Length: 373
Ligand code: SAH
Ligand code: SF4
Image (cartoon, rainbow, N blue to C red; front, side, top):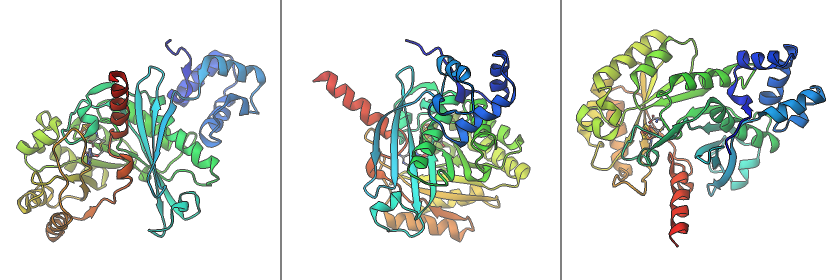
């Protein structure tokens, strides 16, 4: 059965006002409802005590508070990382990760529920699958199904915000990264509307500087973001500094080759005065030699940027392997020596398949096995 009710999380302030006006409701109801949705984190219309009974009943009948049902949750051994697979109304699934960080690394497992957690980052998805098809990425290998709606993107954040609030945390979420399944700039408009929902004080009200959006290199999206007056962080998945290799590792490079990508990034820096983060997943024998490091340094020379080296999270379907720790260090040192600010990403929850799209793949493999049995 297709879902007919309006997803309230898919409406911006203007659209919600339009809906309520068409119901002959006073405009101040918009603020009241948004407060319940995004500040009080209500998951039930019955809780919206300052709304008249009749309005609550109508809302419950004709609208819904998001469209995600949690299916499976996995936690890392230290309890700090949690990944949840959600089902949407058409049966498709999408995954979201919550990463908690401690003030004092190495604290015991119970810390997940304790006050030592100083940062809570949600990693959200924008598509079911991904059409870019990077060969080392589980999502890319699974093919593309569809784009998520604004409501489905916002609901991922609200789910974790509600969960952390229920656990008694005063500051449920601190950071947000759009680095889950999918390419966020393929549908720039939806991603932009999501960024508005996250930063709008009447809705989630997160600081733009605490939000990072990662693209595989959609030049159009980078250019559109550069024109917006919102201080979100931009990350670009580089993974290779020459076109031949990048064509293979990040196939969107065939459409937007490095020259165009770098021009867009440099223009972005000029327009926004913000640095760009380049992600570089090190793959054994593929893109991790000293010559590769030198090529990266040359490509980024003189640019306001930062390189984030990522240890590859090996996926079941690909032959790509992780670079040894010694070689990672060597790569990092070469970039630093060339004056490129470089950090090594701390791994989070590899054992719960925290890599992009891996839980979803695991579940569909299990379902296929069950069917075959
Ligand atoms: N589609 C966007 C955002 C989601 S992927 C993009 O590609 O930028 C987020 C980051 O995880 C990207 O840098 C991506 O290249 C990286 N990634 C994907 N699969 C990975 C894997 N198996 N191991 C390490 N990083 C991976
Ligand atoms: Fe898509 Fe990003 Fe995965 Fe590439 S790495 S397939 S762009 S989700």
